[in-house]
Length: 77
Figure 1 (cartoon, one colour):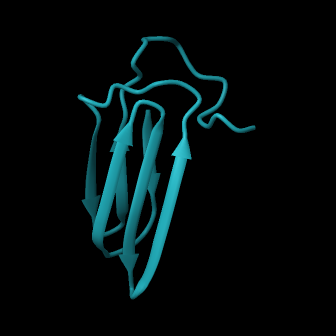
Figure 2 (cartoon, helix red, strand yellow):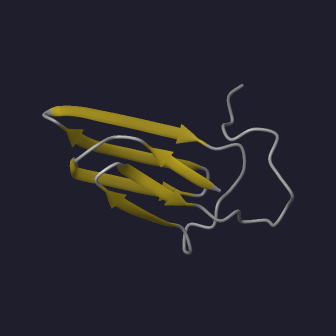
């Protein structure tokens, strides 16, 4: 799963990856942003990674179980 948070010039990033949760907090242009996403299914936390660049944060979140696709990204509808 590829997930992007388009938030420019992030400072003080805090990222937590759990089995079915992605958490991000960061500051952009003096304003704090925070998001916690409860995923529909599990990701492989040990091989998941993220990259921070000038345009935002990009996540590479491999699925724990290989399957064609999820019906949706989040647990909530």
